[in-house]
Amino acid sequence: MEQLSAGKKLDQAFEKLGKKKTLSFELDLNTDAASLKALDAKSDPAPGEEIPDEVAGLLSDAKITLTVQSRKPLDESGEKDLVGTAMKVSTPDGDLVEYRVLGDSTYLRADVDAMSEMMGAPLPGADQLPPEAGALKDVIEGKWVKFSTKEMDKVVSEGQEDEGGPAPAPSLDAKTQKKLVKALREVVARDVKFKTAGGGEGTEHVTATAPFRTLITDLFGEIRPLVKDLPLGVDLPTDKDLKEAPQAKVTADFTLKNGELSQVDLDLAKLAESAKVKKLGLTLRLREGAKPTAPAGATTLDLKDLMSGFLGGPSPSDSEFDASGLPDEDFPLD
Image 1 (spheres, rainbow, N blue to C red):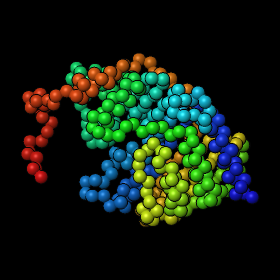
Image 2: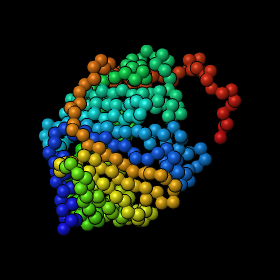
Image 3: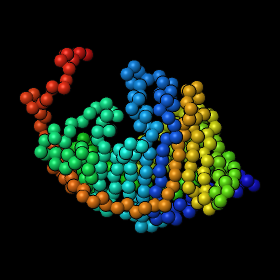
Image 4: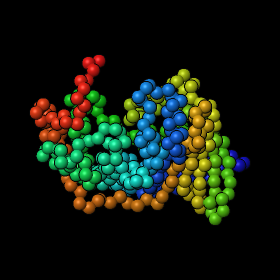
């Protein structure tokens, strides 16, 4: 009886989310740099391929915030119904990258210095870019730029055609969405064990526990017949591929407030097996969606000029290339 009650409460909470037209959520990796380094070491990376301290620190502190706004309730919406989307990746030191899509305009800004420092590949400053770079200089300086979403799609499509690549993937149609949701619900009902616990003041916790290998094997087994209808164009792992996955049990804790889903905490520490990790999990926090708005003062980025003038221009000659920052030693021929 508790299994049915807990599962039903969770179903009702997700149904309420689907009735909203605007929704925001925040996702962060609930871990620390030392745990990520330990996981990386367990994978036995090649010398020099270990995860850098800067990247481990960034991943452990980074948060992703996403907001979607639709004309229709989200459970009835397709790609064409979305009127606003916003995504931001941030750390305690500030925002790394943010974009917003409103109508036919996409807005973008990024902390290029922080990102290039993390990757160990410093990019040229805005004063080092050629005149053809135009608004790209504003990108380097962390300012907002905007460009036509349709123009971007066209540039990407033309680039794929020129290179003989596949056409852009179609969006997931409503019929396939329903099939996918039905298949996933069947697996969850079969493999996942639910429990409820009260938290007081209208708060309730529903915990869902399942053996990891069994869960993902059954999930991919249900999804595999639908692959031909999916837009991703990727091959799913086979049952044989998944035999190496840990069979340890993972637990998700769903926090409900007055029957609405407010947070999901996923504990993945047991999947680390012999790796020495202090904590490893994911936290998803749901918020009332604030409608995405266009940032003021964004500079227009002309993608055609950028592609044909700056990115498509001739390579710099030896006399134009500044090699003062390079070491004097010759590079090895091998």
